[in-house]
Structures are given as C-alpha cells and as structure tokens.
Length: 197
Image 1 (cartoon, rainbow, N blue to C red):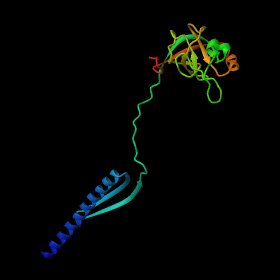
Image 2: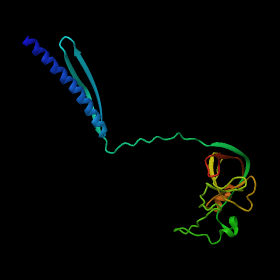
Image 3: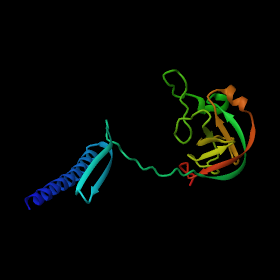
Image 4: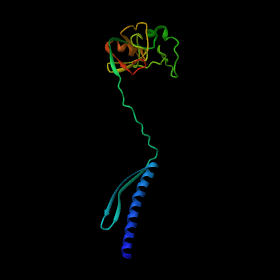
C-alpha cells in the first residue's frame, strides 16, 4: 500500500510539475510580450496514460528585444481623384518679366540670391512648371488640373487669360517662348484641389 502511495505521489508530483511548467511558460511569454520581447515557442506535450508522465519539450525559442516600441499606423486607402474633362484649352506660357507681366513685374521682392519672388493673384509663390494663370470663372484658384499627364495648380490670372486659356509659369522668358502655343484637353482633378470639389 505504501508502494502504491509512493507511485501515486510521484505521479501527482510529475503532473503538478508539468502543469506548473505549462502555466509558467505561458505566463513568461505573456510577460515578455508586454515588455516588448517577442518570443516564438513551440511546445509538445506528451502524456503517457500508463506511466502518468508529462514531458514538456521546448524545441525553439527566439527572442528579440525591440529597441523602440512599435507603433501600428492604419492608413486609409489612397483615393485617386476622379478626372473631369473641361474640354480643349489654348496653352501659352509666361515668366515674371515686364514683357509678360507688365506693371506687375515692377518692384517685386527678391530672395537671398537676388531672384524675384513671384506671388500669384491667389497669394501663393509661383513655381515653374506647376503654377498656371487661369480665368478663375472657368478654373477657380487652388484647383489642380491635368494636362498631357502633368499636374498644374491654378494660382494666378492674366489680362489675356479668358475662357478656355491657360498660361503656364516659367522662371525664364526663353523657356516660356520655347513652350510656345499648344492646344490640349484639360482635366480637373475632382476632389484634389482646394476648389476641385
């Protein structure tokens, strides 16, 4: 009878140890994950009914300590603006010189390099190959348009720019002359610009 008790006691101790080890390992993985330590563990638990033994094997543990906390940022999918054709427009070009801008070219402020700072009618600094002069009754200021695969932004106006006409801004008069006169279909990027609703 004492021999049977000893066997049962040993089996209970083995089973208690195994359960404790499983709980301890689970707790250690949980605590490690809360502290930024990532662990991968694979455990096999084998229980022999005849011998009432539980064997716990850890096959692989990899730990990596994160240097900085990982921030998960969920990004909304990019919504590409719809294109709405505004029809065919006459495209010309201009620069900041007196020939192109008349009296508006006089007394411009200059940057540190001595280049004129050109501000459009909407109050924004003009950028070569991006800024355009428009008839704001046709294309409101701030609207982004697409011409021949290139995006422009309506930021200026001009005395001769009426109806379906666009003037593309360049830094030099020579570049503006080289652009010449062109005709192209113009698309408004609906939802992309300030007024491109």
